[in-house]
Image (cartoon, rainbow, N blue to C red; front, side, top):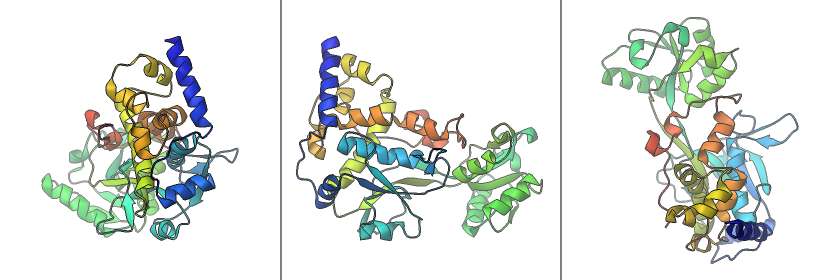
Length: 340
């Protein structure tokens, strides 16, 4: 076993120095390699996604996605340039080439041929938040009670659909903005506030002991899949982005983590894990990468559970129950295709 671990360590060191065996890479992937950096479109200043810490360093779910692509391509997670974007201009910035990838963008790209959705990395959903002291266990307990929401009237439509499907009444008031709706909820004007789960988590974090006082109900009134998006002019770069994400998801499913990575590599007989870690097969070559690309991702960022818990776990500033972001085997929507 010591020989295996020693050999593997040597391979990791060698490939971390930039040794690779690229195949037929597209022009964009070649350009990224030449520049030595990945320009990642991120939502700067949003806690949990992308924000600077007290020392000025970037951290967040989106930042770690970018670091995973850097680890796969360059052997380390540091060769990224975070670029602040907003959803209105993000696709135009991508097509113009100002950024190489949008870390998280909604999957509603029907009919677009110039950009490609690379896979589901985060599920945001319209949901309801209540006060724990009110003893409301699920959305059905809100029958006849007032709901506050703010912003798009389409949200009211989702709520009405849910009420009709479950034969309950959910009267609602539009406060004009999510912040005003939350203020009305805190003032006791309604029994629940409706918004996207991530927004609810941020609101909850703004309240003292909010996680203990407020609960996001499990019912999902809508589902918005978010993930990386790239320009459609380079299949090679799309494959790197897509399969790097899938590598973290599969690693969680196979119980491979940053902590047990070396021991799993030296002891497992599971063919899918061996292929994932580059010890069998030629998946790296097929992507234009070296064999240990996924090994480095897991060592740098961790598996998907580690990624999620690092930024949305119970001990973070913006805790958010995994819910739909759980693996498919746990009732969630996160799934990776076979590595074969």
